[in-house]
Length: 425
Image 1 (cartoon, rainbow, N blue to C red):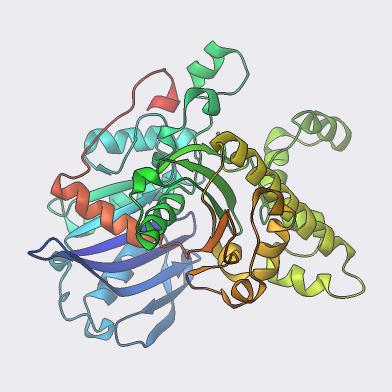
Image 2 (image 1 turned 45 degrees about the vertical axis):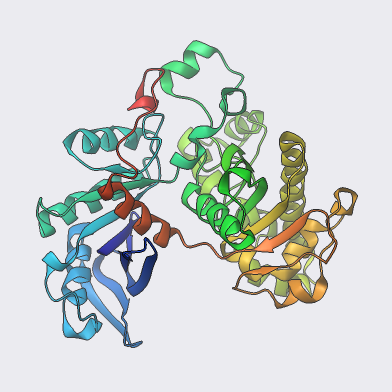
């Protein structure tokens, strides 16, 4: 089956075409056929597509909305320029898997989209106003272009974290108020944390229900997850992706009383404060220079790099604190797994995060760590009781797999009940 994987943002549509086939002996064959994006939706959007022939199609074109972007994608995918012999018309796309950030309390796993599900996703826009409405737009656009016979599957970032127990996902605020408005820790980056958990089990030859690890998705967005028996039991992001680790432009954990101080003394509204915490804080706010770790590492090596060094130190310290907390919550772990743009490509950051964890038996191998850039590797030393790994994430592949499983009946529609309000929509 040829699966179109769509990741729709407010101004960007990213895609991949992944072919998945199950052989007679139940082996799974997977092949990435194309990828690309339409960036900066509007009259002059940047269109960048890459097909099986290796060439890159790069143009500026009008794509005012998600429907136009999906039309551009499918038009190119079905053309000879893509080099995909099995896709010459839209009907050759067997299904579409959509990344949906927020599934609320209802969606505990990937779900075939029908009218009821679509209405629920629209209602969840109140919980994720920046993320869910674009996903709904992508679903509607795909249905209009491909027709009702092409199935749509929603794959949720929050679904993997539905196994977090109540004592870990509850906030210590009045219970009825939390229940009424769905205020709880949902967690995000679930497709990434789940992918590296499954991949770690494959690499180690360990049944998934015996995997006890801490996964660190470190990029412009960053989160940590405690995995016990292959299931998420705690995660650093909360009601929104703002909670937890220091990120590129997000503050992470913060005393909420700070908002009152800034509101009174700077005259900022709630919307302005949230914009600041989401877009002008984190590494960018601390350094006053950049949200890009590569830029900060370069600046930190210079004589004027004090703020860059501070930003890096805070980022690593906060991550190390969460590792310690999750080691305590898990009662120990077998490994720490790094993924995401920083986690996969920044050996110096990994080393700084792990510094001082020898008390728990973690010793990095400097040569292995330095060589592990963008590929799978164990970076801990031989004999290290707590191992450390780098496993590049592949959220698109997981979305394609879930789409096929869902259509085959291996992961049908399932809801998690309890509570009222929009959090359960």
